[in-house]
Image (cartoon, rainbow, N blue to C red; front, side):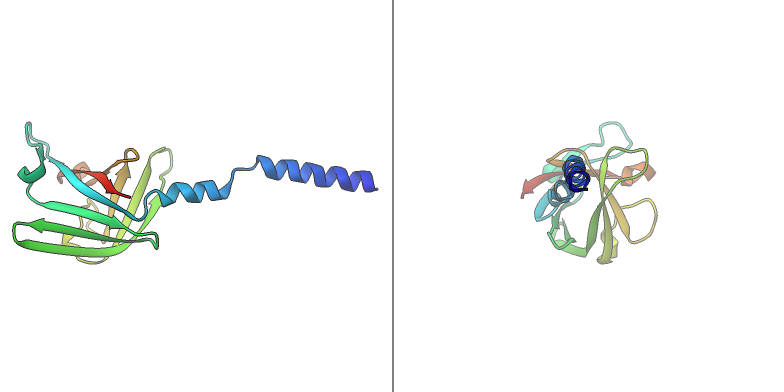
Length: 149
């Protein structure tokens, strides 16, 4: 009986060691937090419509915090607008990309989306690049780079 018990415990330990480490998955999400992402490129559907730097219609950045909140700041000339809300990392069926789903709590005029609701979707393109999905419905293509982490 002791041998069966020992064998059962050994198999259980071996099986538990081969399971994915949940903490590693959590660490993957942390890379999106406590970071500043700055708008660097704005593009449209027309040829030669891409603008960078000070040629863009506005300047903006996101600040993502470890507590799952974000702040978006946009400056257009002398006008500075701010928005805040919560975010989470999401994946969609049959899509290997990671997305940030932002739910706005204030500053709704800064939402760039296709759905007309209080959410905005950003696609994580690399460790240093994210982009808005607004261009899918004729909004501008907005590309951001990581400037602080």
